[in-house]
Length: 434
Image (tube, rainbow, N blue to C red; front, side):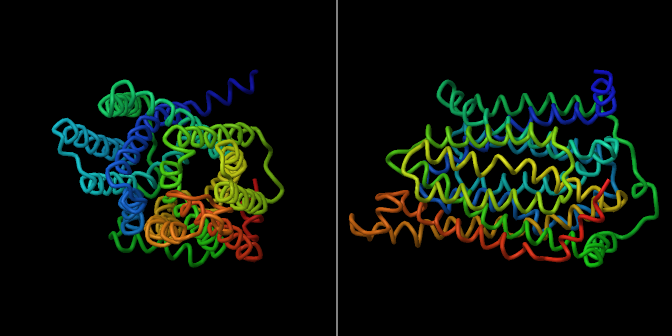
């Protein structure tokens, strides 16, 4: 009990930040979930819905390197507060457009791009802030706690958002989002000190020199760079999955909004179970092996059951297998990054990671949405009722997305096998021990 109390005391500032950001994240996730449903019902297109996330992630690819340089030079707390405020302002704009009955899908593209830009600037500052306020010996707990909050949000988002949409419509969902933002903003402003680190107090570099430093560090540390490329391949498959998932769940006659919410809730439950386990599990002998095994389990299960399953229980079983190990993967990934990258340039390197690791996400959303709408749905629509493809993936709208999940199943396994023998990645086990 004494050790537990000491741990809570040492992690106080981080835990306060974590709890309030989790609540704020729940509000934002509810709004995003409701807007995905709204946009799909407006246009009935996987590509139109996928473009929401393309606009969100495009700033990561285009601006992340410079955002990291700014993050290392500016006060972290001010960055977090300003970015949160501007992102909340974009939500207010959605509310006004909705109340005036003027909200259109293209409005959401612009608003998502603005929110994505704020996240691009905020994310490296947030990573460095966590390093600054958290004792080194507790780095192992960060990944588990992050996925704990993510899993709780995954469970509650479809449940609360669907209930609020039914009871009060989009207005209530956005009001909850804004209320959660205000609470998190005030706690960060008044109660969480974030100390400055050396990079903020040292010599001044111009923006290009500072941005280039993160890239040059990666060129000298190929293990981290190759690990980012491995995750970029995983993100390509995952983003195509995310583009196809609403199209299948909202279109299949035996699915719908309720089924989509149930599967998302199961994903949250799986992440919650995995997060609890990850928080208390001991450090593995090989972090790299733990990461690879977790990703192979995820890539070889969920897409398979979504592709060939024809009922909600089967989809839920696949979702649980696909997500239960991801928190353990992220726990070890987070520890490798924090223990390998020097603290004074973490903002720049984390920002470079956003470019190299996440550039495949907008590409995957575009490809996934286009392939479902223009290739796989037409192929399935042209099939005879007794064809092999129909027996495997079903019939009617949504069966094309199911067929696409079969392709993603093969792609995900292929990415894992491609990187499993990368010697530079495996060398990280010796540099990330503690």
